Amino acid sequence: MSTPFYVSPQQAMADRAEYARKGIARGRSVVVLQYADGIVFVAENPSRSLHKISEIYDRIAFAAVGKYNEFENLRIGGVRYADLRGFTYDRADVTARGLANVYAQTLGTIFSSAAEKPYEVELIVAEVGPAPEDDQIYRLPHDGSIVDEHGSLAVGGNSDQINSFLEQRHRDDMTLAEAVKLGKESLARDNNGGERELTADQLEVALLDRSRVQQRKFKRVLGPQLRRLLGEDSSSGGSSATSGSGESDSSSEGDAEE
Image (cartoon, rainbow, N blue to C red; front, side):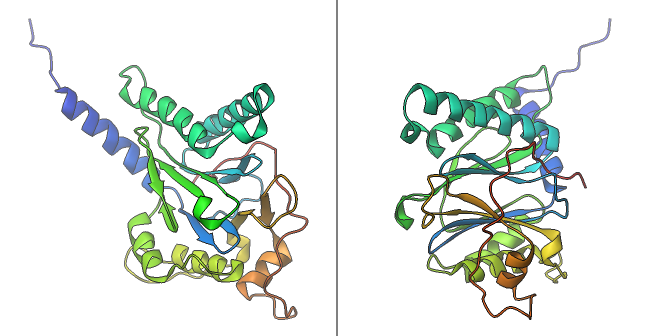
């Protein structure tokens, strides 16, 4: 009779973590930056229908990298949690911290379960507050841990190089145009330290705007408005316009596969 093959629990967890990290690294990056009036999300995503950035609730947004079907299920679950909690209690009781805790429990349970593979996803949950110091940004890796972030953050792809680039250039008092341009420049960095050419058509941009009078602070920046912010539209003199027509998208959203 052959001896059963033994793998220590530590080695099994390390193998699962490495498997998830490799899957996440194959996706295109997402950058999140705080600016003077809120939080902006910039992602490399040429798809117009499969989104990496989504609205969850009034002041809360969700961004993800990795496998579309996996983080799309998490996004839908987050929307259901937020709607139920807001309806049962009060809209103010729906918070990014509460949502991050729910996601952490789900990801942690899946990661530690030997019955299924770990999710190849990394999530960002952000909430805009009345003032910059009230903004909240949480990063949730594949294992369900929660990291409280501030200022700027990149996940997926070559996130280490992008985060180093952002740390040197990001300021909390940036204008929206400055933040979007910095997001684009950071995403254009490659693993060798070079720079690729990215245009507005290759980017997905959305923001949580605290100055918005509506209760819902999420909106997308699309088309001519995005090109003006990036300085690609030479026919327009204004660089501070945002997408008035780019309202939140409630359709199924996710990451285009590589």
